[in-house]
Length: 282
Figure 1 (cartoon, rainbow, N blue to C red):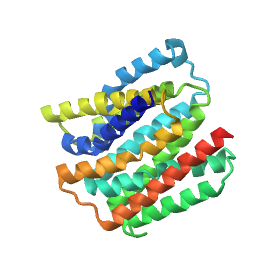
Figure 2: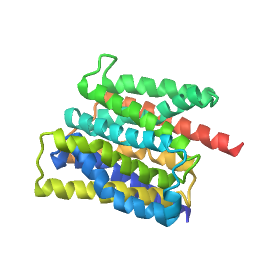
Figure 3: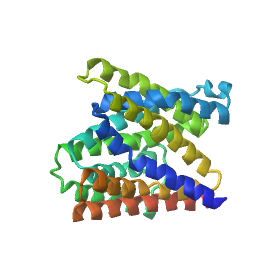
């Protein structure tokens, strides 16, 4: 059964690794793309939440503020992510973006009084070094800067999700995040210059149903067979799949500094996951 969990995680990470392609091929501004992605995803994610919890459990909203803020951060971090994808190469964006979980750890140590140990400090240093190397130095261009904003907001998403899951089931938290993201990204539909094509509609539908709902189902089902820490480590395969797919479909060849930066951030993420595994086993 552990093999099933492993294969489901590989499926989820490979799907998420192709998300940048969906954003580019849709031809939509990032905010509009995110709106339709979460709009199409919500019915399926809501069904999963009610199936695993209950309708009553879904509407048990106390405390609501971490749920709300995590939903805001979901929308914000995806808008920044797809904006960055539109202005720079995929390897730079996904590498910097995955410094986000380390930001979550830093926030938890500051605001939740979680103790920092050698693992945590090493993760923060490696993630910072990875961002600097991947972006070409501290004088980063616009795409790398937007990717950094995506990583920071991704970190806040993880932080508020951590608080939320202390009171609600994880899938229920995810469903509320998707619903809230629908509302906060709707203004982009009203005020952005965009138009739908048949291809754009089909791609956003796939992004909502496959890249969000199906991938989340595979993720949560995999957790029935493998540990969260092991799943978190496997999640860094997103970077590998994203870079490979960008190479084949967008002819984007990662540079040596991007590869080094990606390795630094992957090591930082693995250290973070191993630290959580160690703490949970105590």
